[in-house]
Every structure is written in structure tokens, then in C-alpha cells.
Length: 131
Image (cartoon, rainbow, N blue to C red; front, top):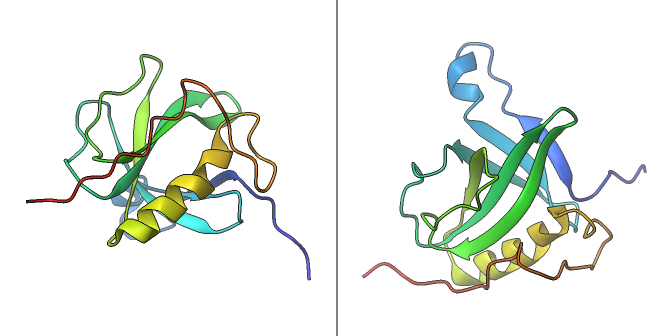
């Protein structure tokens, strides 16, 4: 069995009938190798999901690059260099904590399994539930 690469961009949804809709959905692999489906939004247009992991993405010539990550409410202000926000919505707080920890490996320098980046690019985990 071949091991797949961890903590990487995994492409967009393949849908031949609705290509415009397909580009809205992106996939990322976390440090564990688990695949996460995300919805793509422009900064300032993210819905107010309460249980979501937000990946702040900069488009580069090499492809999309995660420059920051946040968990909790999805409509937090984006860092200045953000081109788009990829949002992974979960149903339970336990899933949010796991996804936040796993997807932190996407930030440059944190791609080794079990590693976690330090600094201003990780917004503290602060979930809140809908009233």
C-alpha cells in the first residue's frame, strides 16, 4: 500500500455537468492524511457558520497556499493577504477540535505529521454555539 502525501491541497470537485458550481468546492488533506471538503468564499462574504474551520488562502503560481487558519465562527476578519477563504463546516464540537488541529499542518512549516505551527497565523480555538 502506498502512503499518500499529508497536509496538502487536494483539488476541486470534479463535476462535468456543472463546472461553475464545482469550482466553489475545494479539498484539502490534513496532517493525518484525512481529506476535508471546503466551500470557497471571497473575504467578507463568508456565512456566519458557528462550527467551522476557516482556511485563509493566498493564490500563488504553485497553487493555493494556506496562510492562516481559524476555528469557531466562520465570518471572522481575514488576514490582509487573503485571496479566498475555504470553510469546512462540522456538526459537533469534537469534530471541530479535531479538524482544527489536523488542518493546522497546512500552514507552511507544519506539514510533518503531528507538528503544529506557532505564531500569528493560527487564530486561537474559540468555538461558540448558535443561540
